[in-house]
Length: 192
Image (cartoon, rainbow, N blue to C red; front, side):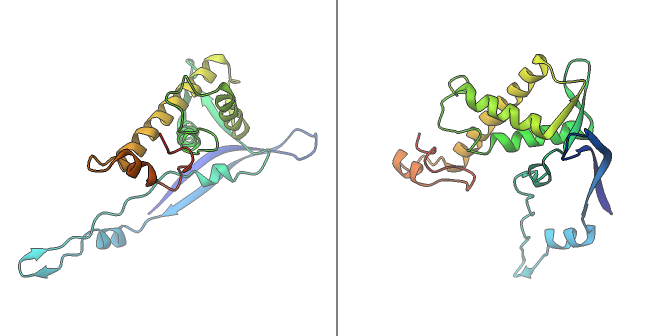
């Protein structure tokens, strides 16, 4: 059975005419239950030992469909009365924020804390989010602070994940620093 995700995307005209049309974008992912079940556990009976293949992990969230949106296309995100995103588009926004926080070009990991990171990086991330998403009602300072808080949380979580992937108590700091645990990490930032 296919799982469908519909996003409310607004397309803008390339000239100064304004809004061209409003449409739903449908992405579908087909998952065949029988194939997944077969690959998950293939018992092999050899001398009373049952070997089971490990469960396949999905991998990191990349949100490629949002990153590769055409210029002028915006995902419309509805906000509740407290300025928090709701609905499928809100979920997509949250996933995109996590993706931005994991990109070293936007959120470098060589800063000790979010407070120490220069505001230029934070403003660049907010501009990127606002270039991909339109907020209804229009975004205000409260929502911007919520987005910054979410970016902070995702960025700290990412730093913790990197440390847990690389930390080995049997190795020296230099050995740990020489092994970059993930290809999404810039080796120049991974020295502290």
